[in-house]
Amino acid sequence: MQSPKERIAALAEEGRFVPLSLSDWRMRGFVRQSSAVSPTVTVYIESDGAPWLAPDLPPRDPTPIRPYVVRMASADPAPAVAYLGRPCQQLEPEQLHGCDPQWWIQARYSESVVSATNEAVSAAKARTGAQEVKLVGYSGGGTVAALVAERRDDVACLVTVAAPLDTEAWTQTIGVSPLSRSLNPASGAERLARVPQTHFRGGKDSVVPPATGRQYLRQTPNARVIDLPRSDHDCCWADDWRELRAQSCLAESR
Image (tube, rainbow, N blue to C red; front, side):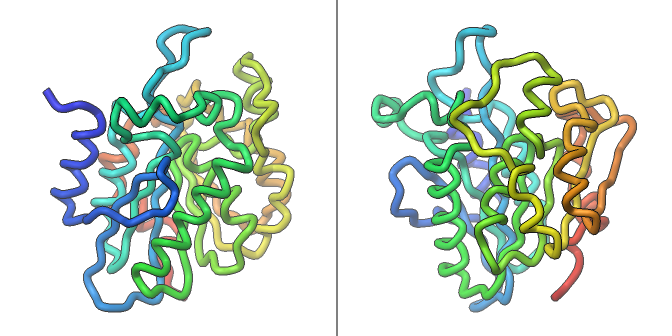
């Protein structure tokens, strides 16, 4: 049986991706390019990862068990596409000893995590020769995508899927401890007022209730929100991604 790390790598290879060289040892990524130079690269950012074993017992390995994001990236027909794991996902067991578990607990959206992801986005942009980036994030990957977008001036499109866009409202709503070591996209959302955005929400999502993003969306009035009444946090974003992508700013050219 394949490990979660092996499963992601196999799906990436099946989707014709190759490993993306990154300077940060905590980061793993893949890239696919069908032309020598692409004006835009679409970067998919992974979720928070493996589920907690108990309310007070986080996973030792944060690699996601369900490979939704690499499947979404594989389904994207854009000429240049990259997939980025989050810090310490998809590492070898011995490498995990050098990882601070806070990077996928309280500090999952911290300056360190966002900075590492931002550098990886820049690496994908350089690797493909792109001038602009389109960012896509599922669940907590959408939170990171928004935080990365807030510090860049080359974002042509931001898409989030079932993502906590206001982490303070989210933790309060679902009754968990505040993410005291993390950044909150809602605190800087006004910087993205002119960035084309599409935010997908599931009407049956109890993990990230749709209403928790109101404060973020209030600051980005031009963002498009697509509500899917029958969708929850898992079903069926990856299965339906080609169709959903066509409704988002990813399908628009600039």
